[in-house]
Length: 390
Ligand SMILES: C[S@@+](CC[C@H](N)C(=O)[O-])C[C@H]1O[C@@H](n2cnc3c(N)ncnc32)[C@H](O)[C@@H]1O
Image (tube, helix red, strand yellow):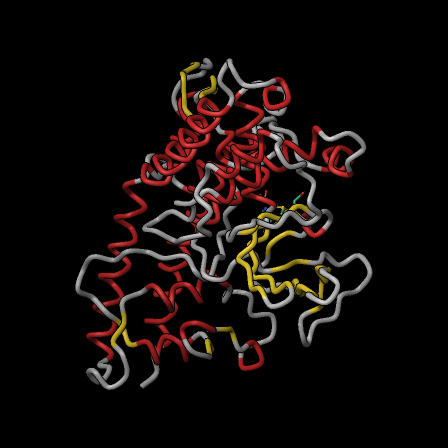
């Protein structure tokens, strides 16, 4: 396990850096504040740069476990982190598939394929930040024992991508001290994320062990995948920033509506048998028909994101409710129309390039997931207006 904590002396557990090693000074020059969510970004502080330095140091130390574990980590080509997105020559599939019979090659940026300029900009900023850090600390005059940790910026940016996508951020109690800590935990870092996980992680402070526990009410059969919830409440753009994946059924995803139309939350929730409070909405499938698979995280997200009247504001009137549904659907259609491609084209594009780089594949899936989410909201609104019962 590699851990780095916020407060001085930042504890290494185990403590692997000998006093006086120059990597110690490089880590010490970073901002030790821990995980702030500022605006749209999760990383205004340097926990990832600090842990990347530590990881690179661990790889370099002879007979260290991390030299072996490195074989389990994804290579730059395999890692989904968008920090590794590059400029690449990509066959312009829209043109080849839909307009021209001959392949037209164009210089495309993988990040543009997100079809989300704000997210692309954030990732670009993250890339520059990592690059600047490498340039500052890996200049030509540094000693060989630093130089060989990351001979080129790609190696350092890969380490930051690994750290961001595989690190756990936890509050640990060690003795009387409670520390905000970033940890790379071998094997636990192989667990995938789920919005309905069957496991969770627990820090056993007595013997400093991280346990994988099974969630209450869950059974894991042989062959079942064990999953955990990386972070509650992360929208797809945030999941992309940190982990390089997105989901079409992320219950936390959001659509920013700008019109005045609103529907009644209680009637919407009851049509889809969604129960609980906004922070813990769940689908009460026992109340639904057998085999009802329509409600998933996307419909739960719709309940959170569609503008609604709160209880007691105004009584629901069917004709007004239907009018509001229409307006909300039109706004969703407008959002879909503003994308340069539709979901069908995105899916075809994905199917047509099984050899695409991980970053490109991830970027196209992200924009596809966005569209599938909006389409599901449109459909949910359609079903709602058909089923409003008063
Ligand atoms: C902590 S690692 C999990 C183990 C990883 N799948 C592996 O093979 O080593 C995090 C990475 O796994 C992938 N991942 C985790 N959960 C996922 C999910 N629900 N959907 C798609 N990719 C996921 C993403 O690439 C993410 O960056």
